[in-house]
Image (cartoon, rainbow over all chains, first blue to last red; front, side, top):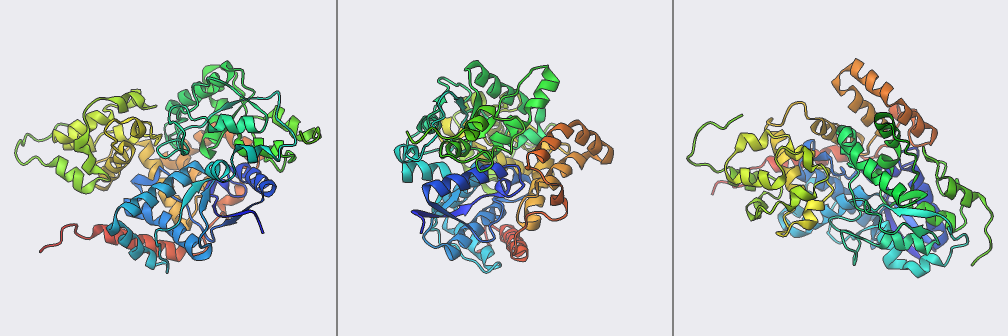
Length: 305
Length: 203
């Protein structure tokens, strides 16, 4: 039996062949190493993200989240819900707070849930994967399985918005959270100090609808990583990863820049440092190749340090 | 776009408090402008949040609900964590957008509004987002030829994602879906029904 068990909420982008499929792959790899049991919530649904508000009313969006809570309580009782996606985590956690704050709202949500034969008691905890790693394991425990310290690779720790605001990771500041830098250091990498675009918004869902405006945001995020001598950007957010990686070619086309900054997940760094190969770390899922990390994955481990 | 000149019984603030998500917070704004200065899309808002809040209080109903401004919110929550009065500004912006859209007062050619509606339809159809349908839906929103042009312009990104195994053409026919779609649809129908119930039942 695994050391710890959680109700896993992967979210739409982290499914097989979806835009953050490699986030899922690398998460599975580190869970194997750390002996974390992640059981997907049976028949989980989309949280609505933070962009559904024109199409979906407040209660409709709340019940989409409440359905996942109810399913988790029914099938995986007593387990915390863990999301890897920032938007899933935020959407779910905000829904939970609202349902907690208003008994009428909870009653309304349960009346709607009844139509699907479900009920939510309000007990389930909603957490982000990063919270689980830091709070339930801690940096020291996360450093223990490292067989390939990522020495010689400099990472710009790009935290972005939704894993940072409005909830964030306990004990961290909104303006300069340090957990990502500490995770980078735990696996032997170098965190670019003073990376001032750390918590800048990439445009989020508006990268699709207001692309021009978002390109400016992404350009700042990438150029600052270059300014700080980073080899690649690393992030905990699936949408940050996608936006910041895929739109660089558009920025180049538009502004004549030559941006080609790889953007990776914290889970990929951890997976490589734990000895996973490139495929297990999801490093085959990039448009801009994170060459230094791929190299590290392909090199044999120097022996446990 | 000016309001008919009716100075009496102006209760737009009360209307917002009763109908807009977290609308009861609007009166708490102290007009410091930290939200405007913290917004990544700040330069693109005709009326930053604190201005919208004052316009609500001033009864500028058509100007607020017809505004493009709240549709500029990227949901980054920077204003929320910095607001000295702790207003849930992001949620109020979403709430104003929801309400203006419900009333049919939202700008007709607002790309974020279109994307939002598309996203909600997409994710509630089967319970999970189909990313390929979502992208194509966005491209083809302005008609067939516009879609072809946009798709062609973005072909590099599409092919890159395809090659990286992060986009799959088969999603168009057989994507990820929930098993209990019937339950989800019934649940959402009920939620809409509950929200339409009168808030202040006659005594």
